Length: 313
Image (cartoon, rainbow, N blue to C red; front, side, top):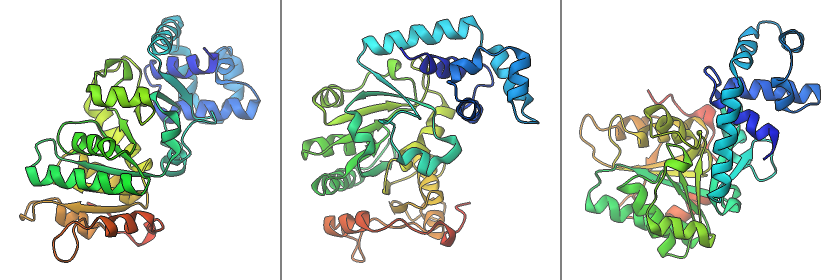
């Protein structure tokens, strides 16, 4: 296993080793013409000399990245390799360009992927929404996924019950492709056989940006929402709850200049109203009907102008 991959994961396992910190250390290593593993081997004096003024906190994180972190990282990478999981650094050619393009300095430095790596750099369309979805909402999610599969778009979602699962399964049933973006480590995920088999056959990819042994956590679920939208040209949000993950995905997508289409309750406290004010459009046409051709045309249009969009909240 590449020593820089081990170094990045070791930092992820270190207190204070967040995405921004790791990316800054990678930038410093690149300017020095060395790998990030070499940065972690620097003496405290050498590291202080290499760091920009005011970045002493980086030195503290490096100092805490001890043998335990390195050993744990090496063990996890061995386990992922045995499970057929690929580890992609942000500097690798297979790393999806849409993530640094949309997420900038918070693009994850390391991705773990099971399945078809090439799907990560295809044109994506997200379908997300409520776990407790109505029958009509589930059918709408499936219709969206089938429409995207019909124009060659990879359907991106979060693997949760409800809207997410309906979209993943419908995309595959229609002969399309899908990407599952996990809110947990890839070694802790036990997906349905339909998705796991599709990953083996090259029509699905299962992606995680977290340590492979990470259990489901709220912060991870929040973080992955931005990744879902970053992988997509357009985001469909179906029956969102006021504080649910699909609303956060919509907010991220709008901030990234992505087109967002929504459908759900129009009650006074529904998040649909705030989403429309922020620039989201309707998933259904003017007659209140689903139109696959209209959806495909909207997906193919250029990205929206973020400067023209209002703040979501």
